[in-house]
Length: 253
Length: 127
Picture (cartoon, rainbow over the protein chains, first blue to last red):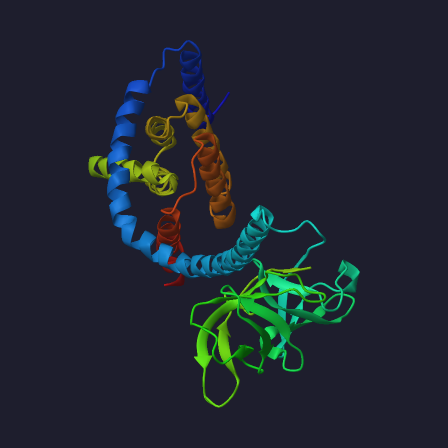
């Protein structure tokens, strides 16, 4: 026969079996008590959250450093993209202006980005792109200079201010004729008759000459130099409308 | 006894909020394990009833698990490792059955339990 201990165990398992059976018959419904317990747990949870709040803050501060590092990394990434995007936007705007310009001639035009290296002016287009020496470098129909030496992938630009040995025939919008050359730093309009009515603000254009289109804007008269009244000619300082060092794209034709 | 039962119910209420009935099971079982078998078995069924209410689980299933735990615990009496092991298993089983989620409170809850466990078991052996 079974001893007392095993009898008690058997009785306990029998009770459990009865409970299973009652559950199977859906007679063991604890949902009401469950709901009461759940609502009580909800209140407990709110209380515990209040207790745990300072610890949570501490944990958040602990995580803050890594979050900050991550943000810094993302910020630098986005900053790099933003810089690239700005450059592209600027380039795009320049291209659009060039394309929308209805006055431009349809002969071969090369569009290139200026490159400044060791105070030398270059454009990022060379013989491979069809650039030829003495081609004009323009920005919105403003003459910036002429192409000097042409290499395979880049070409040097002789800016008007650097043209100390050569000159360009030019005329003002009032019809005064002269030559444009540089002194290394500035663009000068010289060989103007001393009695001519040269005034500040007059526009200066290229005039007809070999290898250079007529009517390209060079700049406007900024100052008339009249140091020596005895000379038969006078010189004026020309202010250019565009600066090669500031534009993002130029036309070569 | 009644005070202990009320105290245990308060613990169970907090425990179920946190998500693991580790303290409730430990304290209630240590309260009844030294009693007569008849009392202990009935108490286990009662414990299962409260666990079922607070964790929304099946009462007979929990009663069955607690009975198995009780038998195993009797078998491994005085073997602290195995006793602890089956206790952890029971807790994990309830954790799994109740679809409980790990949360921030365990960071406080578990160290507190281990500290209590150490104080109530190892400390007295050392002294």
